[in-house]
Image 1 (tube, helix red, strand yellow):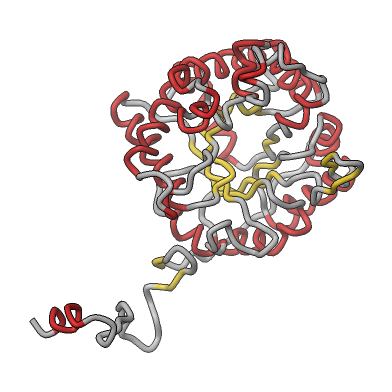
Image 2 (cartoon, rainbow, N blue to C red):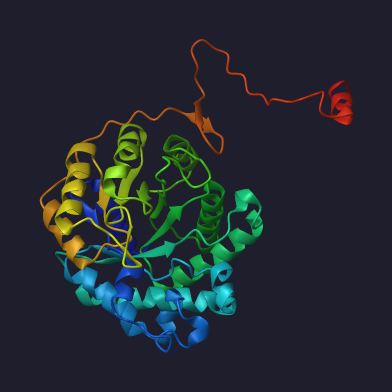
Length: 363
């Protein structure tokens, strides 16, 4: 583990103070009125990740904006920087290069803002891609391979922590974590790792996984933090945060949108003010023991300045989580200890549905 990563890990696990991530990359790129030329031509328009090559100053502006208001950690502009997503723009062959360049760019900005009293860090953003392995869109092996390429670029570019974020399919996140820890083993190194799931307004991840099942799935991995980001605002996340607070032995990270998105005049808008976001994050830290805060879609430097100011003198509330060893399906979790015993694990079958199946049961 390099010195920066070790410092970050110590800060995370000491729980002496709250660590603050940045806010939205896409929202703040959009405010710069970028043209297709900025993206490198019409064929790349909308590919934010390509901006690290075609218009790096636009990405630097976003990082600098969040560091200038006091954020401790910024995320690389690599949310969709796997060859899976980049292939939609014919850029799959540049996946490693884009990840490395994005990490180097963020690392340079972090160094510019770094001081002895206020160290700054870079998180390598690893998004969910556009395919769901659970639904058969892509094989686990192919997805893991794509993530390995991304992880290699991020590490070579100098990130201090890896963030598997906006998880919609737990199998997708497992592929990402397999890539992360496989790369660690090959390189004989280790930096902190976080996972953030995205809970929809339905109360589950996109494929129906509830927060307890997600916790059961990811608690088994040697990660530093489990959290929630995107999809909703902090109000809608509250019950799920309480579940993590009471049950998760890992650190917690919370990065909400600036409220639920609204369509105003044909454009997406987010209604939550900086003060309102800061109020929610203060509650999560002071009452539920959240150790890491930040913002997602719709959050600007003004939002993060309010959050930084609000949590500056706070230490996360003490938690005594009671994690129950469990197993989980895609949807729900079940404790391994059931009183009265025994625990029976089976699969419902229909012997009348197939003659061949019925005969196999009698073999």
